[in-house]
Amino acid sequence: MEFGQFNVNALMEITQRPDLVFVRGQGSWLEDHAGKRYLDFIQGWAVNCLGHCPPEIVKAVEAQSRLLLNPSPAFYNLPSIELATRLTQASCFDRVFFANSGAEANEGAIKLARKWGQVHKQGAFKIITFNHSFHGRTLATMSASGKPGWSTIFAPQVDGFPKAELNDLASVEALIDDQTVAIMLEPVQGEGGVIPASAEFMQNLRKLADARKLLLIVDEVQTGMGRTGTMFAYEQSGVRPDIMTLGKGIGGGAPLAAMLAREEVCVFKHGDQGGTYNGNPLMTAIGVAVFDALAAPGFMEGVRERARHLSQGLTKLAARWGMPGERGNGLLRALVMDREDGPAIVERARTQAPDGLLLNAPRGNLLRFMPALNVTTDEIDQMLEQLDGIITAVRK
Image 1 (cartoon, rainbow, N blue to C red):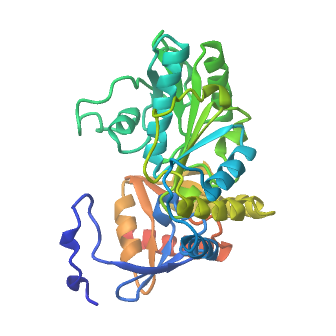
Image 2 (image 1 turned 45 degrees about the vertical axis):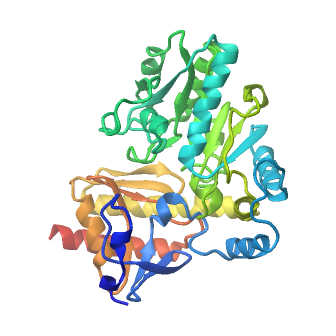
Image 3 (image 1 turned 135 degrees about the vertical axis):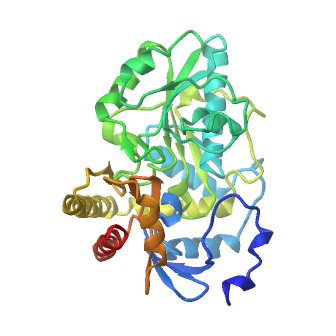
């Protein structure tokens, strides 16, 4: 079909989309309506941790769809119990609440922290978050986010989210008062430019939270489920958070998310939290398949090896072009450029022939890379070679 034959105007206009319709995908590759192939280093913004249409997910969907789809969250179901058990055994948390999106998981974390403040801190409700952070698109999570310009889009904001600076402990301490209940951060600020929180900063936040009787919440919607080379990014700093949120990679492309908490933080009463589709067997069966693939012997070692390969390749590319360099953690990385031509590079990469390349530029001088965790070194090398040629074409 020609693009003009698709009634794209039936979809609400929420973002600028190119004139193509994707029809199939496999691994690190997508194919559009015209048969053109694209090497995908976005993967749904770090969602497709095993690539497009991985056999593990296909098998799980086929098997579970023949058994049970959704008995309602008012009842237990086997896949949700199996996934919750895997997550708690692999982490420092005791309980899991399943949700459908990272924003919903973060909304749940905010509600749980505020409820804990009502029970243990005389109604304290403020949650310190960070400039340039991103926690979702609900009214509360937009208010919690430190993305520039978001404070006025759907004003007034939800109150109670003072903003500190990442890796600046003094800026956090200065915001604490008797209404503060928690500190919430991403271990790596993805939308903010792939900026990692240092291990020292994470450790000092834990000490500060303990000293001031605050909760420490890690938003691992993007960094969790192996993205940084360990199952959860918080493990690398040696801290024990009180609450963690997961999304994106936990479902490998399916709408699944989770909020995990330590037992002493779980103060919800019946009726405080819920959701029609939360923890349904189809999505959590997919989650089990994804978890087992990530937890398989040698998988995380492979992620770390491919992350080093990508990092080294981006470093060489930066040196060749006189760019500042690269940064990130695991297979969440960024190329920091010397010019604001990121959008032009993204456009040129997508439209090149015969094969396109899908990249992301969250900042004008930044390219972000979020490949499948099982991307091959050959695919990384192909991307780097294509990118070098694209930069040449854009800057000639």
